[in-house]
Image (cartoon, rainbow, N blue to C red; front, side):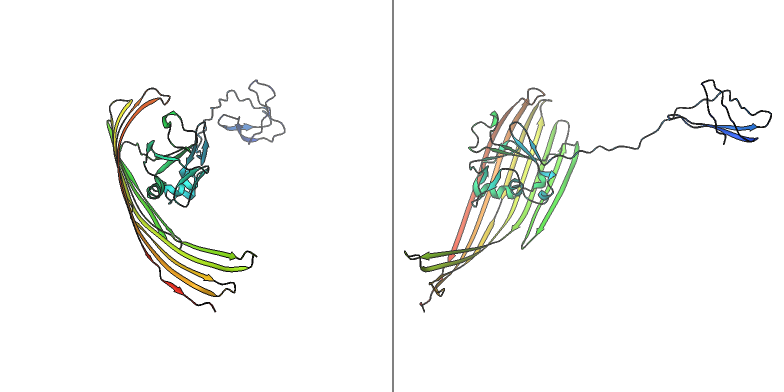
Length: 366
């Protein structure tokens, strides 16, 4: 290959110290395709070769397809609320809405099932900006029946905006469920199973039909929950001079179990681009039972058993809830201003039966 140097932009090339032979002329430049000439003969009588015209074609480089991805943060801070993106935390997969709430910042659950926000009771829970009309153990059962996979976001508001005025002494929690708005018929099935000391399962079926003038959607959730609590209580009593008087030891093995079936059916009719008329029907059936085995012993200062108590507690409960809603939504502008009218009719029934067996075995003090 002939090596060339160009002393000035005249189109002339100079070669020195090359033996007589036949060469190829190659010219390359950044951003242009490489040029290779035909054979050029160099002999003793013609030591300099002049290339009259070299045209370089601009090089067009095609980049491979680039994919830009962004990760949604688990917690987003806004002016008036904290937003929790449920899917951003892998631990929420296969769990319930109640467990997703417990993992959210500032939210806790007391032993009676009441939800607290920053340690304060009285928080109200909304689902898709609609009140649940439930509290305590009923709300706990309802949220436990909703899979976390059906939840898009949880909005936590300690100082709710005007549309939640006078709602909640400690604040408002708004659970936003997922809604597939792709045109046509679509749906998905979510199956969840957890195995520890006992097993739990939470499953859901979601179906959507989206047309230009209306939308029909349904969610059906079914689950089974089994758990246990092994509770030990020890009490020690003393005389006025602080010498041991007696003691009390108790063990309670508590086994709660429940089943749940939760369904929702909704229809939205688009009166115009800014006005939507909707009807939603929701229902929940949640039977459960709790078996508690108690053993207690009263002991003297020498730790001899004076009395033993064996108590069995069998509790069966059932809870059902129905909500019927008709709503009208009109968007005033593109900034989020709107008018919403809701009419709700809510029914629920609750039943709780308990059976105590309390045989007492008295022993003489040795």
